[in-house]
Amino acid sequence: MKRRIEHPDEKQDVFPLLSSGEMHIWNISLNISGNEFSFYKDALSEKESKSVGNYKFREVKESFAASHGALRILLSKYLNIPIKLLKIGRHKKGKPYSLDDPGLYFNMSNSGKLAVIVFSRDSEVGIDIEQIRPLPDLDEMISRNFTSKEIKFILAKPKEKINRFFRFWTIKEAYLKAIGEGMRLRPDQIEFDIDNDLIKQPVIKGVFEDEDWNLKEFSPSSQYVGTVTYQFENAMINQMEFKLN
Image (cartoon, rainbow, N blue to C red):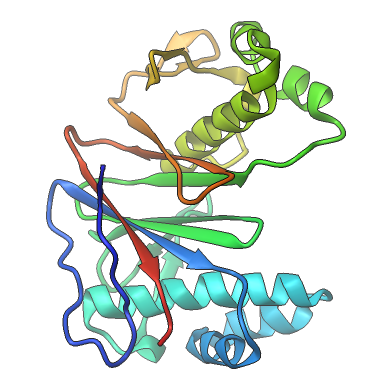
């Protein structure tokens, strides 16, 4: 995985070109100031701005504004379209896409104080991250969301139990988001296998998936795990930091 740092602020003249064969993964901090919140909120659509006002807790307001505002800023940069003129639609199953350029694929995830957005020119993509943290109902979550084979892997090393849980969680979520199912398909109906850190093709309801999906684990930051799902071989993945300067 190649790592490159970019800062997509309004003063920057050079924005990274997204070429075929690569993906851009942007890290967005959700720990923002009042001025940053206002800047992000100004980038939102009218509908999104109303959504921010409907949230009760400040942390949720900031998370939504920063993640969705950053998405619109980045789309504006990639497409060279003013932010307020951007048009984002949704597929039948709810996955967002660019009405201005359906060939620019993207997906977003957030956890804790971090969000990530992946962009590709080659295929649909799905991404998921999780902050590694204690879960009071961990054992119940494991038994409810994973197959017996996956549970065996998660429990094989007790000291790695929580890490393995979150690894498998992001694998399943990223895949479901890539195929546009979200959580419509129960996680325990999908089975993955990790062999020497390579994620094997999924089995869905006992049947091997016939589409060629690639799944790659990555770490967006310390104490976080993540997975990105895509359909093209030998992808170059560039992780970048989103900054408002």
